[in-house]
Length: 171
Ligand code: FES
Image (cartoon, rainbow, N blue to C red):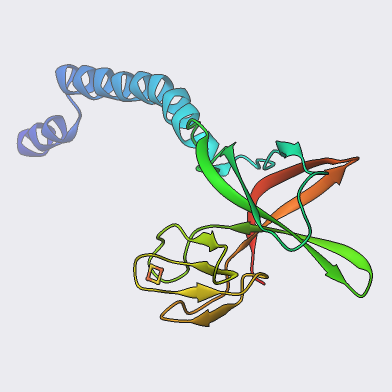
């Protein structure tokens, strides 16, 4: 009888043990309450739906047809966290297609290894200086190692003013 009473007493949680467990539980709960908003505010930009903003390029009414013209634009990079806009070159290309002028806004980043291409006035092609990649006036890869056409920025015209945004599409 005395033995079983002793065993029962051992099995019971002592007051000291109860206090330790209670203090640890309260501490863990408090830490969680403090950490949750901090972790949430750090990670929330990753899950927020962001709209890529339109960025003003220029009044392009003077861009001649058939002559790609480069503009440098500070484009916001959509990384989730706020990062400063990055300067990017966009080529505005006006083409006369069966009497109507069509416009393209080409990225100058080579699709081979991301060197900067430029419009070569003598070749009348975009030339990549790194490995001799060539692109037509519409950005189609026509020579050298580039595997794809130049990417195009989404664009819109408001009157004579061109806006682009950092959304790239294929040719
Ligand atoms: S990076 Fe342009 S051809 Fe290689």
